[in-house]
Length: 129
Image (cartoon, rainbow, N blue to C red; front, side, top):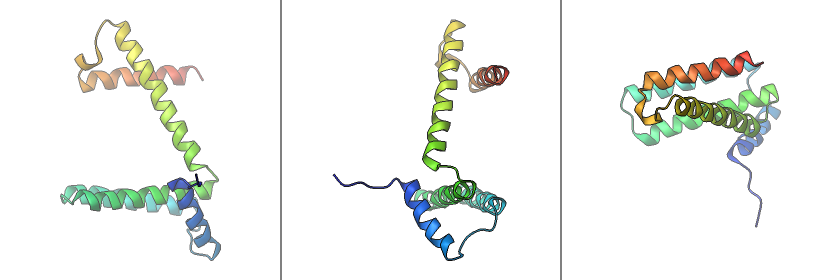
């Protein structure tokens, strides 16, 4: 079986190549501006009722810009993403436990009630630092 890079690794490779010849943002803040621009384009596409394929392309641009921000900051994109997923999972499991402890079922709570419990979970994590 041959090895294939992840999409984030491929994005890093091509953006590093481009940066090597000077085709790059000057600062991480410049990339943040690009992220804002790409997010605005996604919002615009949604507001205009664009087709899914167009929105997907815009999301791809957002991901690519994010990998470039990570490159500028020397952050491993795959590790950062995994860390975010694991943090969400830890918090979600804590949310489930709190709801269960209250004697209720997740599906019985409104979105606002779930958000309130989510905020309690996050606050509890922050208090433990």
